[in-house]
Length: 190
Ligand SMILES: [Fe+2]
Image (cartoon, rainbow, N blue to C red; front, side):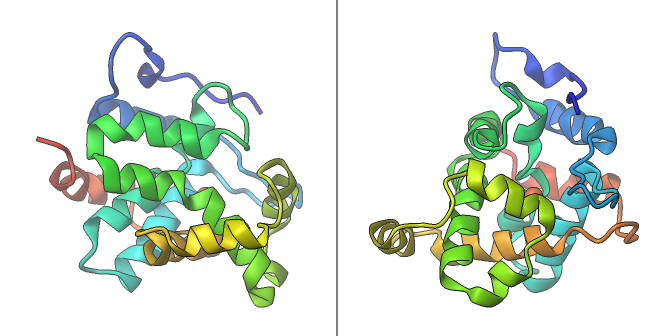
């Protein structure tokens, strides 16, 4: 499905918080469906992911915001699974800074890490995640595992990715985007 366009696609300037909000709102109608007929709208999935992190890491607002914006790259060119994490990191870095951008960038490597090292995680993957795994590089090699475990954000990146996979419950009622405005503003670069 083609992603709706939004103001943040302007390439002549850095993104703003308003662009991030526009992208998330546009994601309301962007289907992350896994082919089973389940409705996984990008905004709904993003809100579920962030809410899980709000519960598990109540003092880490940056991690929660990273969970909220981690998939915004699906709304940006080149609209490819294998590029969406890197694209999103570039997009959000001028808005929220390096930690949030790196957490967003690492959510695909974290998926590859968890799939490779945790059989239970692999067994619980949604069908769409299995399909995209191949496009994202598949299992990690031993050197890749060692390098990923040395990442300063290793623990937080895997926490985000576990919430990412769990945040795909069709129809689950979670607080809306408006409940995140103050948190988003608090994490904005000054
Ligand atoms: Fe996601």
